[in-house]
Image 1 (cartoon, one colour):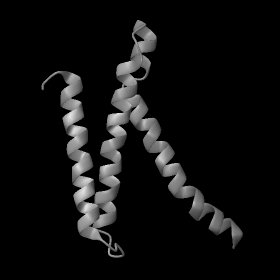
Image 2 (cartoon, helix red, strand yellow):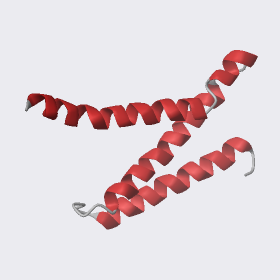
Image 3 (tube, one colour):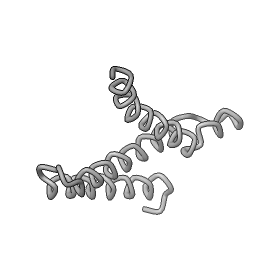
Length: 95
Protein backbone atom coordinates (compact mmCIF):
# COMPACT_ATOMS: atom_id res chain seq x y z
CA UNK A 1 0.00 0.00 0.00
CA UNK A 2 2.83 2.44 0.79
CA UNK A 3 4.46 1.84 -2.59
CA UNK A 4 1.29 3.03 -4.32
CA UNK A 5 1.18 6.17 -2.16
CA UNK A 6 4.84 6.92 -2.90
CA UNK A 7 4.28 6.42 -6.63
CA UNK A 8 1.26 8.70 -6.59
CA UNK A 9 3.34 11.44 -4.92
CA UNK A 10 6.36 11.06 -7.22
CA UNK A 11 4.43 11.10 -10.50
CA UNK A 12 3.40 14.81 -10.41
CA UNK A 13 6.92 15.83 -9.37
CA UNK A 14 8.41 13.87 -12.26
CA UNK A 15 5.97 15.54 -14.64
CA UNK A 16 7.18 19.01 -13.67
CA UNK A 17 10.85 17.99 -13.74
CA UNK A 18 10.30 16.67 -17.25
CA UNK A 19 8.58 19.90 -18.33
CA UNK A 20 11.40 21.95 -16.81
CA UNK A 21 14.03 20.00 -18.73
CA UNK A 22 11.99 20.36 -21.91
CA UNK A 23 11.72 24.14 -21.54
CA UNK A 24 15.41 24.50 -20.75
CA UNK A 25 16.32 22.63 -23.90
CA UNK A 26 13.66 24.49 -25.86
CA UNK A 27 15.10 27.83 -24.79
CA UNK A 28 18.39 26.87 -26.38
CA UNK A 29 20.46 26.24 -23.29
CA UNK A 30 23.29 24.62 -25.25
CA UNK A 31 23.54 27.30 -27.94
CA UNK A 32 25.44 29.86 -25.83
CA UNK A 33 27.78 27.15 -24.58
CA UNK A 34 28.71 26.18 -28.12
CA UNK A 35 29.07 29.71 -29.54
CA UNK A 36 30.24 31.38 -26.28
CA UNK A 37 27.34 33.80 -25.97
CA UNK A 38 25.95 35.32 -22.80
CA UNK A 39 23.41 33.33 -20.79
CA UNK A 40 21.34 36.41 -19.89
CA UNK A 41 18.88 36.09 -22.76
CA UNK A 42 18.54 32.35 -22.20
CA UNK A 43 17.64 32.84 -18.55
CA UNK A 44 15.03 35.45 -19.49
CA UNK A 45 13.65 33.07 -22.13
CA UNK A 46 13.35 30.22 -19.64
CA UNK A 47 11.60 32.53 -17.16
CA UNK A 48 9.19 33.63 -19.89
CA UNK A 49 8.35 30.04 -20.78
CA UNK A 50 7.72 29.24 -17.12
CA UNK A 51 5.25 32.10 -16.93
CA UNK A 52 3.39 30.58 -19.88
CA UNK A 53 3.56 27.14 -18.25
CA UNK A 54 2.07 28.50 -15.03
CA UNK A 55 -0.75 30.06 -17.06
CA UNK A 56 -1.42 26.77 -18.80
CA UNK A 57 -1.51 24.91 -15.48
CA UNK A 58 -3.99 27.45 -14.12
CA UNK A 59 -6.20 27.04 -17.19
CA UNK A 60 -6.10 23.27 -16.76
CA UNK A 61 -7.07 23.59 -13.09
CA UNK A 62 -9.87 26.03 -14.02
CA UNK A 63 -11.64 23.48 -16.22
CA UNK A 64 -11.30 20.70 -13.64
CA UNK A 65 -14.62 19.83 -12.00
CA UNK A 66 -13.22 20.27 -8.46
CA UNK A 67 -12.07 23.87 -9.02
CA UNK A 68 -13.40 26.22 -6.35
CA UNK A 69 -13.00 29.50 -8.25
CA UNK A 70 -12.76 28.62 -11.96
CA UNK A 71 -13.33 32.22 -13.14
CA UNK A 72 -10.40 33.50 -11.09
CA UNK A 73 -8.13 30.67 -12.21
CA UNK A 74 -9.10 31.17 -15.84
CA UNK A 75 -8.52 34.91 -15.65
CA UNK A 76 -5.13 34.48 -13.99
CA UNK A 77 -4.13 31.76 -16.46
CA UNK A 78 -5.05 33.86 -19.47
CA UNK A 79 -3.25 36.86 -17.96
CA UNK A 80 -0.06 34.83 -17.46
CA UNK A 81 -0.21 33.40 -20.98
CA UNK A 82 -0.72 36.89 -22.46
CA UNK A 83 2.16 38.21 -20.34
CA UNK A 84 4.37 35.40 -21.60
CA UNK A 85 3.40 36.17 -25.19
CA UNK A 86 4.16 39.87 -24.66
CA UNK A 87 7.59 39.03 -23.21
CA UNK A 88 8.35 36.72 -26.13
CA UNK A 89 7.59 39.49 -28.60
CA UNK A 90 9.66 41.90 -26.51
CA UNK A 91 12.65 39.54 -26.46
CA UNK A 92 12.52 39.02 -30.22
CA UNK A 93 12.34 42.76 -30.82
CA UNK A 94 8.96 42.71 -32.54
CA UNK A 95 7.62 45.34 -30.08
